Image (cartoon, rainbow, N blue to C red; front, side, top):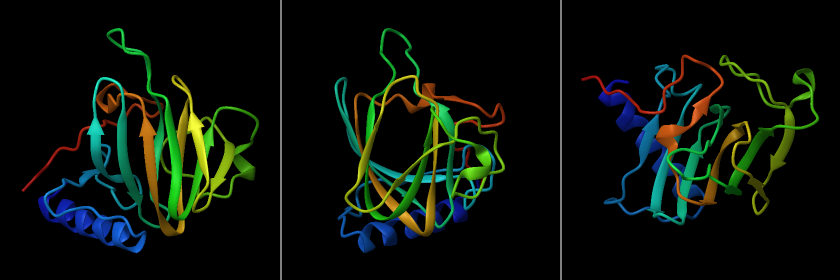
Length: 176
């Protein structure tokens, strides 16, 4: 991803935090991930991690209108059990898809251009939350207004996430 795009997406995320009434200080980093696809406005995620210790993690996530975080699961590695996470919608609407009953043709979100296999739909509006257990495939997408989601979880090891689509990488690669 080009540095200018990264900076633009970071500013958009900061504007969404403000809309949601969430204070993110200027000295707090806002990470932008394009999942190695260089289509960040379609497949991407912006996040601010408050804390990530051996026991807990708390972060805020922004997805722009219809932006998708691709299908993945948090796996057990190096003795660390996969991450258990609770999503709480703060602004907008988020379409969350997890393992369970559900068909591709019945989902409300726009089907992303990445590989997906799970279609059990959970729609979260402000104040609603859902917990995802370790080793559970899931993906999520913002509604038409974009969304801000708080995540509360066990230790986050996003670098070990396993994605359904083999073209996806978690770490953003920067270009000038």
